[in-house]
Amino acid sequence: MIVVPAEFVSTTVAREGEACTPWLDALPSLVAELLDRWNCEPDGAVMFGGVGIIVPVRRRDAGVAVLKVSFPHPGNRYEPDAFAAWAGRGAVVLHERDDDHFAMLLERAHSTTLASLTDEDEIAEVAGRLNHLLAIDAPAALPRLQDQADSWAEDLEKDARTLPHGLSSRALDAARATIDELARTQPNLIIHGDFHGRNILRADREPWLAVDPKGYAGDPASDAGTLLKTRALTILTTPDPAKGLHRSLDIFAEAAHLDRERVGRWAHLHAVQTTFWGHHHGYRRGRTGTALTNLLALVTTLVNHLTPPRPA
View (tube, rainbow, N blue to C red):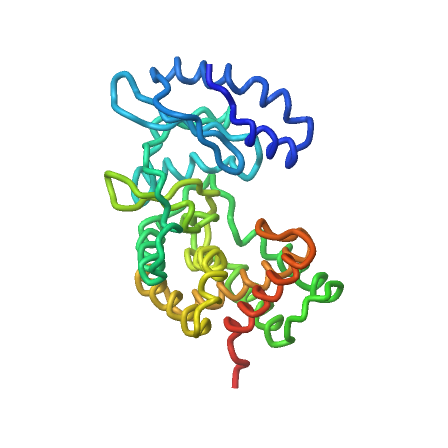
């Protein structure tokens, strides 16, 4: 049987509480049962992400793959539906699925991620091309991103009123307008939902393929905001951060065949929401103290660079 990495155990318990212990205890047996059912054998060290483990496997009748088993959580429920709809278009292929156990057998990609590149133009172009490939008609099973618009609006008003955020009235008004004008009615296209460089991997079948989707139906331009906020810390340290941010959005929009203004507005909304998230929860790179204060200042700078001018 596999050995579940100790770090994955500790981070899962920290996030989910002791109630997840029975699932962690049963995980080796579950993996063994899935390997037997799908005619596979382990083929490398067990890896893990934020919510699941990945076991490299060799299929006895069909080459290599990976077995992914995630902690049962609503946020992971629609991942196999997205993969099934894409059928390898811009994303790894789904070979097998067990929805009751949040398990999938997937095409194996490499460990090199798009985030490891240093050329921001290349990152934006690759991500834009994949965004275009992934934006196909969404199956009825996927949740609609537009259904979150009311809660976004409510949270924005509450946070703007109660948190010491330092955002300008122009930035807040622009975020409100994006929710009202873009978020409430969206296209019926598949969007990744967690579209950043660490979820885009080098592959053999194609140069790059997407992994770990949340799976929503909505506006593909919204994924630009997820990508940009993960690149912002790097771009904001360059001599001309405003130019770098807008250049990345220009390149992404062109490669994705999306309206540039729409992409920019979604990126701005994401940045505003990220500011408020930091006040509530902190960030992965800094949850308290000086580290958090510095990150909040950077995210506020990001908002300022992305805030569109008021209409004439």
